[in-house]
Image 1 (cartoon, protein in one colour):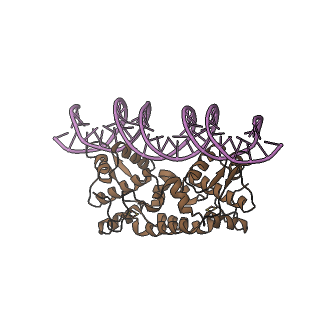
Image 2 (cartoon, protein in one colour):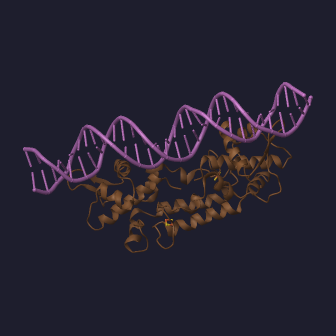
Image 3 (tube, protein in one colour):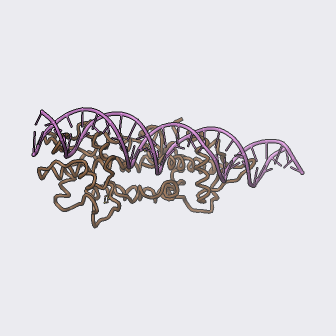
Length: 144
Length: 144
DNA sequence: ACATATAAAGACCCATTTGTCTTTTTATGA
DNA sequence: TCATAAAAAGACAAATGGGTCTTTATATGT
Ligand code: FES
Ligand code: FES
């Protein structure tokens, strides 16, 4: 499972993308409310994201968060990597220090493909592709 | 990802099964060493498992841990449930409070099947089936 | 130019998970 | 029977993740 921080990050980024698509630049308070996350904690997460250049921000009046738009899509993989590292894609489900085909744990055969599928999902889906599903009415961003 | 405690539990149970298959009843110290886990912490985990009757134990001289053998297999699902609850099988990857087909998050379509596969794995695989893979030389229990 | 709205930064605090240490209980082999 | 080996129990400590509060820096609208 992804950590709460990663989930907050993904939800926040998707919300920002949705707003950007309407030429808006949401601020912290609005984002936190919309994704149902604590405001101060959301602030910390936004700081991590901007520090790692996944996102841009402007301070001061009328400031807020936005994607510069020059980049292509932002993959979920990148977000997960920045927020919690990539161990959820690589580590052994059984707890061995390394997951390898050479000395597999007894879960390796069946768990490997699951990890693969999750990795593929994270690499192929982007903040933008998720936002699009919401815009098309095929998914929701919260349960409000 | 399963928690460390859950992983310790699974490894310990598999080791006990392997020893039981040779008519042995390993004690705490031996188990902890073999699964490469802290002894005192392993003790706590064994207590949880015995309290929930996933495992039997005898105190005193010549004591140790063992499966009573009357039960059929012990599914991974049961172990996970006892150790950390079932949220890893049910919760929303995006962080919504409920995962539902009615109001799906934008990850639901692609993540759902992955969760399904993981649940199936946990329900079908048992401590005994994992032990068998090791006995047959198709997997290892540690990297020692 | 300046007041103000906003993000950034830093110092904390709380909860949970992971891990250790000590004491108690109990079964059993000598 | 009874000393001892073992698990059980309880109290505590460290590490991590999640969360809050206060102060600082800065961009912008007026
Ligand atoms: S070795 Fe355990 S999942 Fe690969
Ligand atoms: S609603 Fe998010 S995974 Fe089902």
